[in-house]
Structure formats: C-alpha cells, structure tokens
Length: 288
Image (cartoon, rainbow, N blue to C red; front, side):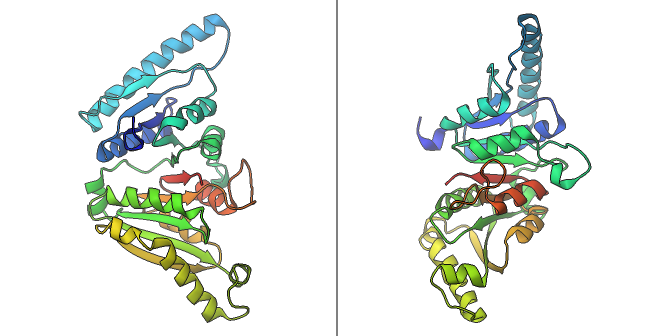
C-alpha cells in the first residue's frame, strides 16, 4: 500500500465528540479517495467483563458503519476492536495511516479543560497527523464548506524545517476542497528575528524578514498546487491567538506538534498546546 493509499483512522467511543469525529473522518476519506478504518479500543479487564465490552464494541462499530454509509455512500469502511488503551491503539495504528481522527472531550465548564486525555496523548505521540475534532461543529462536505464560508485551511508555521510537513499536509487539505483558500500564519517577534540572524531593534526590517520567511517556506508549492489560493499572514507576536480565532470558521487548522526543545504537557509546543486546547473547529497536529 503506497502512502497515498494509507487509510484514515477514526477513533470512536460512543460519545458525541466521537460521532462528530467519525463524520469528519468519513467525509475526509471520501474526498481524498482513501479507505476508512473505524476503531474502538476494548480495555483490559476481567474475562466476563471483557466479553461484555466486546459485544458493546461490536454494536458501536456496527452503528458507526451504518452512520458512515449514510453520510459517505460507497466508502465501505472496515472496523477494528483492539484490546488496548485507546491512545495506545490509535498511536500504533497511526504508523500505517494517512491520519488519525479523534474527538475532543468535554471535562468541565472551562475552555482549558475541553481536551481529553486520549485525544491529547494520541496527538502527542502518533507518527502521522492527528485531527482533533472539537464538538459543536456540524459536519460539512467540501462543497458545503465553500458555499457557507468555511473554506479556509489555516496553517501555523515556524521559521524552520518543522514547517515542511505542516505545509505539505495543509496544501493537500486545501487542494482537496473546491475553492479552498490556504492561510499561512507565521508569528514573529523582535527576539525571534534576532535569534535567526535578523535585524536588531528594527521593527520594519524584522517584519520584512518575516515576509521573506513565508516566501521561502511556500516557494515551489505554489507551482505544485496552482489551484490553491494562498494568503500569507506574518503576525507580530504569538500566532496562537490568530490560529484560535481563525479556527472558528476554518475548514481545518493545521499546526506542528513540536518545535526545537520546547515542550509542554506531552511534548506539544506552546503554540500547538494552546491552539489545540482552545480551538473551535477541527485541528490537525502534524509531527515533524
């Protein structure tokens, strides 16, 4: 199986966010022409309890397939019920997947607690991109996204090699959506400009340097994806606020998982952690 045929993995658990993630995964697999695998992990427990969990898993997967057939006819998903913890199972399956799609979990009334442990762990450890679908956003096919204004794919990039995989995934996502626009956001500060060998205490020159960084990052990809309209957005300061705000009306927000030696939580960069936690739409976390 080539990389272009690797399946989309959808993790389901019977929750409302899990159903929304399944809908998103089904539509994405359909538009990209990829197979879909629906996964529900069965936890280790006593034998009698495990048999009951197996039956529940079969019922959930059967219902999930029925749901996929309604919203993405012709996709013909397959199912798996591995005996493992959810994050461990999805991370393992992600080694041979184009992406893993999971739902966020509501753990209370605080926005900072709107991300569950399984989705956070999967996004932090998987070797493939992980899309976390935040609840409350109705599933739309690509044509609906374009007509209703949800046509932007937004990518947050850094001025280093970690952005290559982010941009590749973002351009592919935009290219698969009719009339999509790709907004590429790059946060810069006087300090970051100085560290990269840029001008010291010259705001205009630092802003020009950020513009050149974006031009260099996108060089060549415009020719590869001529159908994608590209908007470059250098942002003075952290890109997190711009990315979170854009996520409310974006078809997808794409961020890198780790940058340099920065680490927060389970290995997410501060920008990734903030965006993933506070986003109001689907977010793809792409490993370097």
